[in-house]
Amino acid sequence: VTEFIFLGLSPNQKAQGVCFVIFLFLYTAIVLGNFLIVLTVMTSRSLGSPMYFFLSYLSFVEICYSSVTAPKLISDLLTERKAISWWGCMAQLFFMHFFGGTEIFLLTVMAYDRYVAICKPLSYTTIMNQQVCAVLVGIAWVGGFVHSFAQVLLVFHLPFCGPNVINHYFCDLLPLLKLACSDTFLTGLLIVANGGTLSVISLGILLASYLVILLHLRAWSSEGRRKALSTCGSHVTVVSLFFGPCIFIYLRPSTTLPVDKVLAVFYTVITPLLNPVIYSLRNAEMKKAMKRLWIRTLRLNEK
Image 1 (spheres, helix red, strand yellow):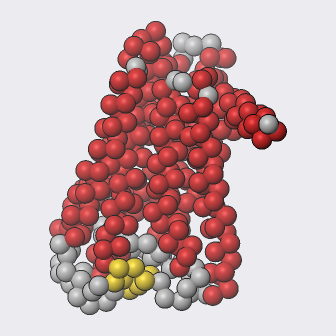
Image 2 (cartoon, helix red, strand yellow):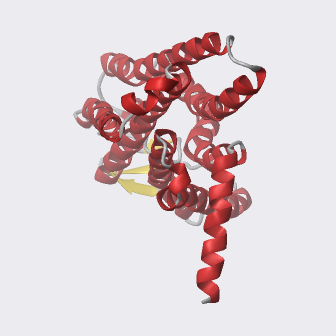
Image 3 (cartoon, rainbow, N blue to C red):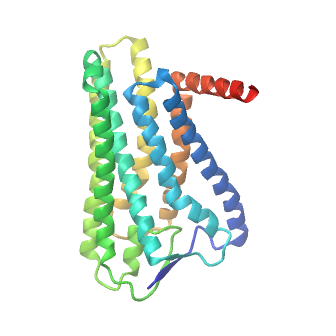
């Protein structure tokens, strides 16, 4: 096998035309929305706290993450034969899990940041200094790379000598296992151990962090609790949208289900799209910074 053929989202040509318009709009919104957050954080002095530092990296990762699958999906919606080379498939698989793993680690780091900010406010600037923040982001990138490299290594050695049709719109682990010409039971277990366990452990750390935060907030005033929960609420929403589908897909026996395509659209397109909406609409400082950026841009255009 030198190439794989995707069945795509739908065999209906009219539906593909509608999907092309929808996903082109969604992908454009993902890139522009997340880029706006990165630009706002980089140019605004009021957004110099570690929370916004991590948020800018999360937005950058979201752009990269959706760019692994969305452009190929959009272009395939205009063609009848949706093919990808073997090496292209491996590259897509690697970067998909690289950016996905990095996002998981970043979300965990952001939960730790909120824990320190709320539970240890007097030591916050000392604990979360620039060097520590840079190291934590570096660990997230390295963790994503190690996770992805291990996943691709499990599939790389598999022989593909027969069918090459993938019932999906991108290369993923479980659909590829179905095409292998050898027994993939052990490989499937290792994939679950790597991907599923990473998601569950990270989610466990996140939930534990927010449980400690909630217990700590009992002693705060109602106004203080409201502000703290508002900040944490955005993060919890993003975590729930991202981890739910990932755990469902990667923490189960190596089988594929029809609903997998819908869930894949959710965590590769919908979640990156909602990230800037959730973090900007629920954050007064971010909205003010975006407004100042817009005013500065208009003044520059007038000149």
